[in-house]
Length: 59
Image (cartoon, rainbow, N blue to C red; front, side, top):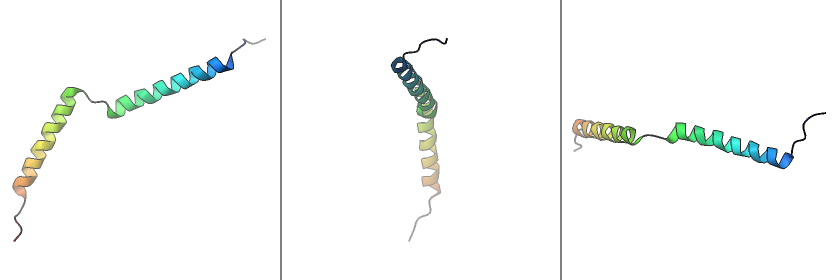
């Protein structure tokens, strides 16, 4: 015979592992280090300055 499994505990364990997998995916998708955020902020500011400097005046 096979091993007896408590289905309630098995469902909870599966749910926990699914949540962990989703959390890992979200960390990879949205998680940035402080240095990376600062670098993106500086890059965006630099781009804004270049675009503002190249903007033509409208009459």
